[in-house]
Length: 134
Image (spheres, one colour):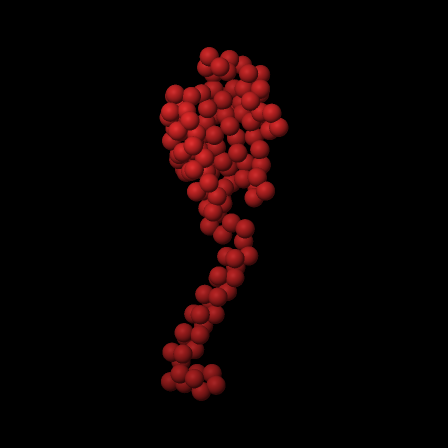
């Protein structure tokens, strides 16, 4: 069976698949976040009264977040990285939030402890970051 311009139909089908694949690749390349944004966290509790989360992360940022959590875990003696959602803020005093150029929001949330008794105690950790309530 012959198709367009005398080419075999199988060749046309292959050409269409390649063209479709190329269009899909161009579409993905045009997106800042082709695989979808997601949330992750590094929970230092119960050893430390802190949970850091990243909201709206790009997949390419994930290794950096995991490395940050590993550093925090080593420094604090406990911690776990999870990429299934942000920190649970129930009981939190608030946190310090910053936004990366990619749009990812990082929040260091603080929980009641000997060090953090009030929201004002947690707010002292923020320096140039924005303090946010839970």
